[in-house]
Amino acid sequence: MNGRAELDVATIRKDFPILEREIRGKPLVYLDSAASAQKPRAVLEAIQNFYANAYANIHRGVYQLSAEATALYESGRDRVQGFIGAADRREIIFVRNATEAINLVARTFGETQLEAGDEILITALEHHANIVPWQMLGERRGTKLKVLPVDDRGEINLDAYAALLGQRTKLVALTHVSNAIGTILPLKKMIALAKAQGIPVLVDGAQAVPHTRVNVEDLGCDFYAFSGHKLFGPSGIGVLYGRLPMLQAMPPFLGGGDMIETVSFEKTTYAEPPNRFEAGTPDIAGVVGLEAAIGYVEKVGIDAIEAWEQSLLEKATAALAKIDGLRIIGQAREKAAVLSFVLEGIHAHDVGTALDQAGVAVRVGHHCAQPLMVRFGVPATVRASFSLYNTPAEIDVLVAALRETRELFG
Amino acid sequence: MDELRELYQATILDHNRKPRNFRVLEGPALHADGHNPLCGDQLTVYLDLEGERVKDVAFQGTGCAISVASASLMTDFVQGKSLEEVERKFRDFHEMVTSEPGSPVQTPDIGKLAVFSGVREFPMRVKCATLAWHTLRAALHQDGSTARTE
Image (cartoon, rainbow over all chains, first blue to last red; front, side):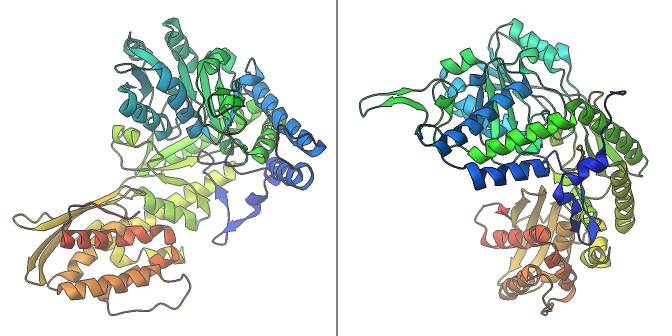
């Protein structure tokens, strides 16, 4: 990671108005970007400008304003296509978030191509968003869920994974990066192993896209889901990438306007992808904001972002390890800038409240990964996650606040 | 740290470290489970009645300092009280922890439970403080449901 373009964090921080805020009289130290990232001015201005100057509903409008709005919306699709390296713009479907993207696949691909007894393979690292839709599918279709375990470091074993890929495996659904403990899966190898047996692979990339370079063609996956709000874009917009032949074979998700070819009371025919999956007026401004967010990330440079975050992770890991009674949960060798930990004898929620007093925003709880908490034998963890706008000085604030917390609870 | 010490008063920290009445009541005891899905706090409240009066009350479970201390102090407080009084004190307690942050603290006659007055400055933590009470009422009504804070 060394030797890449340096990131000028002081300049970057000026791009994020919220970082000027104080919380309980202290400067905000925002260490919860894994839950949702803050927004740069470029995104705020793009949305404001769109509503102020170019807003109208998209598609089918014959007037200029609608044509302009449509062009902006569709240029967002092109931008996403380039950003994740998709081969065709029709492979980019706009949804609300990664959760909706995964549900879309479960409801369409799952509902029509999976049968009773078919197995869906996931890992023990998954967010509830990549567990529950498959369980709901199982209730309807009789499919089964298989779970690849993780070791004490939070890593998976490739041999164990290969052994679980069987005749009945009809879908593999993997997180790219664990939201709870930061593990980065050896995705390319895992996808290749599944594809060698003709098994489709879905990737939950919500935690990966803001922090590392993603190329879906290079990965070789069939579906890739992510949310805009973790990528410095607005909340309410997300993306499902789907390989075109897969999308073409899938029935619609929601029915309504924009997803049809022709409608009569006797028979309706459906539009081709991506429109088939974008019923109703979409989050047009969300797409405009997402495009600006991608522009921002590309301007800073995803490699520089990754290198900066890795340096923060390294510093934070070393500093936290020195705190008495602090145990880091998840020590994968390939890890994103997510630090999950517990303080012996102090409940995560008490730690969260104490840190908030110091202006430090962290997430506490099960991080929507309850099975993973059970695996590590903890009811909840404290999670500090780092992004491009965080600084080494903020890690010092975190460490000092953790020491005070230990003192308070004795 | 002042507001924090206001929230985590010495009594609360003490009851968190050494919860009182932390045991199972055997026999015909009424009981109910309480669960705060937000935090993962989980506790069981046990209750023995003598007519319309609490004969014995105990709890077990895990949770944050606020929820454990609240259960501990609650079980101390309601021992021997009439059911009507328990209900009244629950309402007083609830009102105290949910009153507007910054407004003058109304200190109803709830003894040591007043140490939870700081909770109202932390709206995210109100559910931690009230979980034990909701669970106690579920045990009283004994409808088999799990008390939930949301």
